Amino acid sequence: MPHDTPLIATIVAGLGLAFVFGALANRFRVPPLVGYLIAGVLVGPNTPGFVADAGLANELAEIGVILLMFGVGLHFSLKDLLSVRAIAVPGAVVQIGFATALGAGLAWLLGWSMGAGLVFGLALSVASTVVLLRALQERRLIETERGRIAVGWLIVEDLAMVLALVLLPALAGVLGGEPQVDSHASGLLALPASYGIWGVVGITLAKVAAFVVVMLVVGRRVIPWILHYVAHTGSRELFRLAVLAIALGVAFGAAKLFGVSLALGAFFAGMIMSESELSHRAAEESLPLRDAFSVLFFVSVGMLFDPFSLMNNGLPILATLAIIVIGKSLAAFVIVIAFGYPIATALMISASLAQIGEFSFILAELGVGLGLLPEQGRDLILAGAILSIVLNPLMFLAIDWMKPWLEARAAKAAPPAEAKPIGPATASGEVASVAMPEPEDGPPPKTKLTGHAILIGYGRVGSLVGTALKDAAMPFLVIEDADKTLAKLKADGIETISGNAANADVFAAANPESAKRLILAIPNAFEAGQVVLRARAANPAISVIARAHSDAEVEHLKGLGADTVIMGEREIARGIVEEVLGHKPEAAEPSAA
Image (cartoon, rainbow, N blue to C red; front, side, top):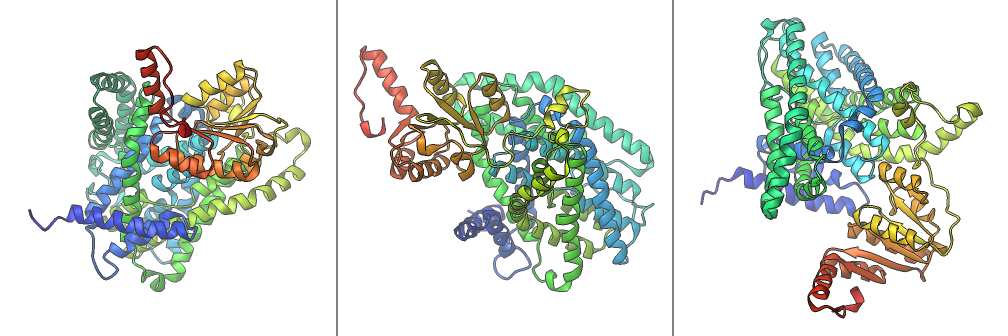
């Protein structure tokens, strides 16, 4: 067996060190992604010791971006995307223009050319897909209205960058660079400058439109059919393979055939697949690989960073960071507020966009290759990306601190009639409704129920439990974070609390001190364990019922204080035995029944 295995070495070193430093970061209450970035710096070419293959690391990271956007698409629908177009399209365009102007201004102060300023500003204007989605997922905001706005904003930015990557080679000569075709970084079909600027723009937009049409017309029929066909074979291995093949295949085909970014192609593949009844299973099957490869993305970013550049370019780096973290954030905040959305939504969008990532690196490399951007510009972009990614979790902490103060000031300044802002497109009732304050803004009010049951999660299991509780006329409330589910529950007259039950304020609103039962219908045993601990601290006498998928999860939850933990596989076996023997079998392990 050959000893020269750079792919294996890169994966082992990247994931191994990411685990070590991620665990250390978590131990010191720092976001694990900081540890992943440090791991990347250590295996990069700018520090002594082992050096991983940067090219391979970047390609592995691109797979992470594809799988992550595919997962987001699985939870999205075309209706969700269109519902936020009134804010996402103008918001992203104005914010890109503002950030580009700030970047060009800094480039002018540094004595660079107009072309360098344009490339530099564009690179600072686009947020990282991985960082934004990670932040939304950690806060369980993907399926909320503000999460949909952020994702819609991100998609508009992706489309704008696709156009920029195609136009830059055509415009290089006009902007003072070297006119040439270079598609090594973007993976887009090269378009010669002889087509003219408007010809290049027209062809690019036509190819993007063609891709969307193919996905909506052909993909809508073919992708769900493939999933259902494979599911009927009964092979879990084949189903998992089909999900990954569709995600990667559509993303790669979108880039090579239509000039669409890999991330955008993967998003559309997931969105089309979401219309299948098997989309939940597809999301579960792709989750482990999504997590692993997204970690490699942060490692690959760390490998690009030269720690010594902090000393050589101190002031320019601080100015670059200020544009990314402060300039972009303020622009996004003002835009969202101007469109009549709540302060909490504006703050969340600004914090999500206060970083840069993969598209910025692609633009920087292309700019240097075209002779437009000096190498110092690439170094500043890399330093700004690393520092903004590290600071991004702190931005979310900052908005949590600022939100009550800003809302209090807004309440004093606004007249009573304007207490509930209305969206920009009130002519369409659909858009106007999204501008109303969301139920999760601020600490939720405490319920007046006593002697009730607290039901956590209202998915496939929770909805069955909730229906039974309602039929039995037992008092209960539901803690849930998906907007669509909350709307349905409210329409059915069921009391709800919006948010994550692991959050102290959200759980306290359920009045656990006076509750009789806590029912954990969520599949995540680690998150359920945090809720169990909160419940026991608030009310030692409360009866806690949870669900699990393995004996290890049963032991974990019972060790934290759950009274009853029901394992799905065991209940299925019990039902089969009851059907075969004609009587109810005794529980093999009453403690976990």
